[in-house]
Length: 74
Image 1 (tube, helix red, strand yellow):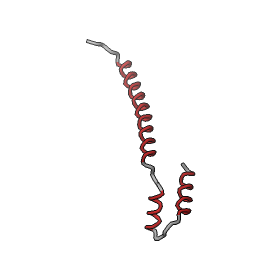
Image 2 (image 1 turned 90 degrees about the vertical axis):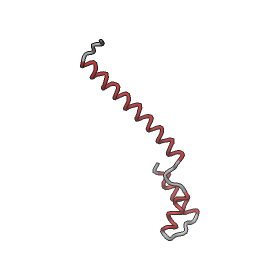
Image 3 (image 1 turned 30 degrees about the horizontal axis):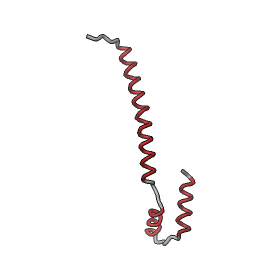
Image 4 (image 1 turned 30 degrees about the vertical axis):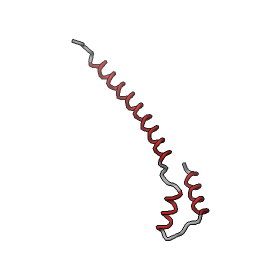
């Protein structure tokens, strides 16, 4: 039977958890970036609809100004 010392087991366990956490972080980050590129959180159609719900008919200039101001803070 294999005999492993307890301190070596704890060190290996912590090392595996750290490496798994780091790999998981970068994998989730890349997945989320791709998701946001495919499905942007706000687009021109959403802005137009939001302004219509507020009772306004937006001009193209207003929509572009809002999009530019939102993209400025990315």
